[in-house]
Image (cartoon, rainbow, N blue to C red; front, side, top):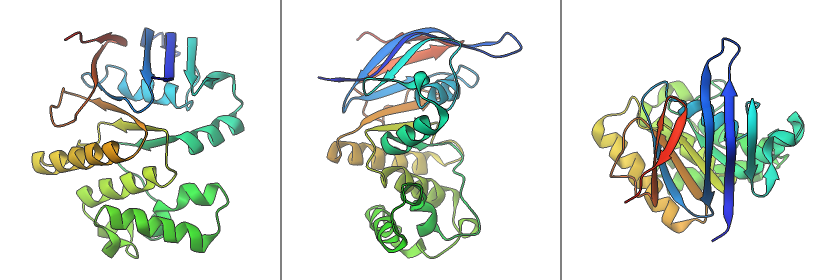
Length: 224
């Protein structure tokens, strides 16, 4: 199976001397589902930012789809991220002055897709998640659970090759968290993208092919 992400001795050191990511190396194949779990402060969000090119490295290399992420300039990196990554965060953020369909369509707006077409695509994504009824409503009018579903629709609208999940069940009830992970699992079986779930605990609801532990910026794969 083709390798889609590869990290080689990656380090991230902040100005205060904090080693957020310390000599991390691993690879992920296309269509693979991986769970990386670690406590708060273990480096999960930093690792997401590094893989997606949102933060510069201190040392090492990251390859995504055979491209060296941190050799791109900011414009190329942004376009590359928008074309290939779907990123779902623990606390979804939206533009409050536009409705939810327009928020979901925003990645297509960045690509220059015409308004009618991108809204049509946004409504299709919302319909798939059972949320077509909220298309014309605004972010402050929906629940935390619905907001996370909307953020999933926004991540999927670009048909990403890689889906990055950053503690996406935080703030949800156990039932809601299970439902969210179940939806991700079901979508992952139907669509051809890699899923990397960064979470505070190993969650058996998420059907992963491999499991990693991240602790104090260091990563280790579980060998079953």
